Length: 88
Image 1: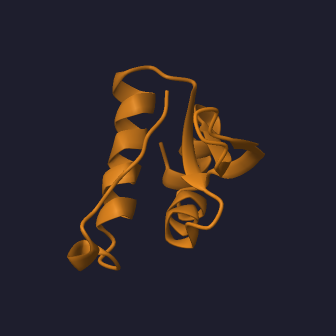
Image 2: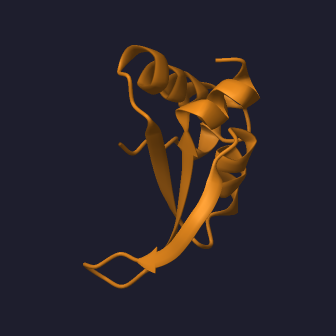
Image 3: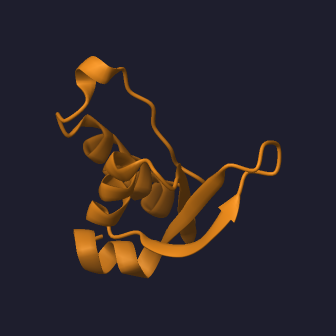
């Protein structure tokens, strides 16, 4: 399962993405029973990468989008990692 976010520029820097993603992770692990969740960002999108690392996600690999070859990073977090970090 993957989570992601897109916000209009006027909403950047307010913590909205972090708060929403944290809740999506909580829901995925506690309500949906998922064991692992990923998120993917373009390698040059530092703000999204910061959100992911704040949430405790760790980089698994770099790859490219098959359709157009743009490089991306894949980050992931497991249920047990989430529980330790966020008091699951």
